[in-house]
Amino acid sequence: DLVALFRPPALPEGYHLLAWDASLLEAHADTKYRCFRAELDANVFPCLGERDGCLRLMSEITRRQGFLDVATWLLFYRTETAEGGESSEFCGTVQGIVDFDGLGSIQNLGVTPGHRGRGLGTFLLYHALAGFRTAGLRRATLEVTAQNSGAVTIPGAQLIGHEEAALALSRLEGSAAVPQRLWPFDTFFGPLKTVFANGEAIEVHHVAHARTHGDVMVFF
Image (cartoon, rainbow, N blue to C red; front, side, top):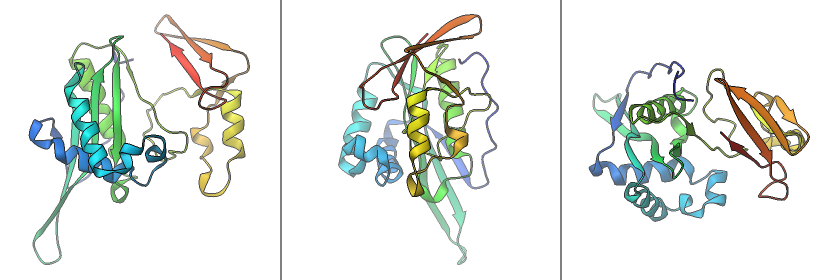
């Protein structure tokens, strides 16, 4: 719900947020590649594991009818070196589109490995959502992989999931384990759960035998 956005974290020193410009397309693509090439996402979507694939994907996103420039951002980092010079790099990207149902859809939000753990993902998410709201949208969606334990966190967010998802997460061990703070704390056992937000019903449907046993669809 975009009516009342959460407060974004402060941007650490040295980081700068760049609004969308067509001249930054290749920078977005290269940053996307460095964000996802070693992640589970690249196994699910092989194009994310290839620099050329990310360029094609970025080009396709910007050509979509629903591409939203005010929800598309790039993070840039600049610092002084010990020799008195400057070191700089692009380190985060997010794109926004409006889907066929009029919902904002976050595309490929990522932060490069050396810059994670500083709240940059949440910062990018906030500005993408603010862009959707500026464009007059009321709701937006974000999808992350189940093993992305460093995913952005949204203050006040309610984690809902089917019992199958919770059971699957509880079985993961070692490097594959997901922190319990990211497990769904509100689970349901049947095919449907209904919750209410802002006076409206939201239905969460369990989809058996989908990509995983715990997949759900949410209807607003």
